[in-house]
Every structure is written in structure tokens, then in C-alpha cells.
Length: 178
Image 1 (cartoon, rainbow, N blue to C red):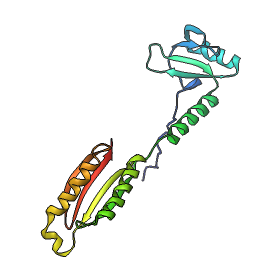
Image 2: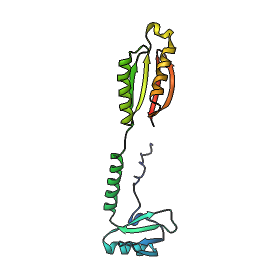
Image 3: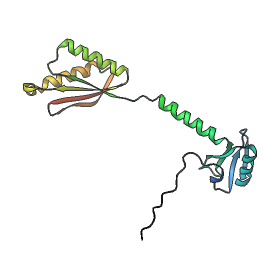
Image 4: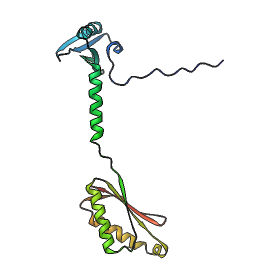
């Protein structure tokens, strides 16, 4: 006979509260922020019920654990708001790609470099890709000279994250803003 599937008990996120706190004595801080000292868990629960609030474990690793009388819903809401604010202020670094050829014209080169500088100002990384076609493969040193020229021009605002390397018919280098 097959044993029935037994799902794992649901895990709660956030601090333990009220009857989930299973220690005999706790350090209690009341709703006004006053330290009540070392009290039994039953007394702390009674005080929380009288105030119409929850008993929430603030510092579970302390001896005895520190609990506070407060509104658990408000605490969860405040934590949620704080996490959303932190996510909003985060900058996602993107890798922008600039493609060139080894025998690029000077004006085209300047246009590409203007784009590279703009990407660094926005805080993004830049991947420079040089594509070799046909007989250009015989003159890899031209591509290396071009990437070294880019490195020298951007040395004040960027650092080399990945040295120039050849993969098939492409030579690549990654620069990151300083």
C-alpha cells in the first residue's frame, strides 16, 4: 500500500509572534518602549492581550529573547515598504555592446566613442566587439591596436574588466565604469 503524500509544514516568514514564541522567560519591551525586564511568557502574552496588540520576537538570539508589544500587521507593512523602497533605488547594471571593424574610419570611431562615454555616464558596462572578415584575419594586430587605443582614451573613466581576447572571428574586450 502506498504511503499518502505528506506535505512539509508551511514555513512562516518574519518574526515569531504570540503563541509561536516557545521560551519560558523573555525580556519584555511594552508598547510605550519601556523595558519591563525579565518576565514569564504568560505574563507577557497577558499584557499584549490587554493592550490589544501582538507580542513579537525582536531579538531571538539574545538570552533571554527580546520581545516587544506592537501591532504585527503594521510591522509587516513597514518592512514591506522598506523592501520596496530599497528595490526602487537599485540600479541594474547592463552590458551595452559596441561593434566595430578593425579598419574603422576616424569619424565613425569618434561616434562610437561618444556612445561609449555616454554608457559609462549612465553607469553601464561596455562590451567592445571587433569583427574580422575575410583577409582581415591576417592582420589581428590592427584589431589589438584599436582596442588598446580605446583603452587609453577611456582609462580616466573606465577600467578593463576583461582583457581583449579572440573568439573565432571576433575580438572582445569588456570595460566597466570607475
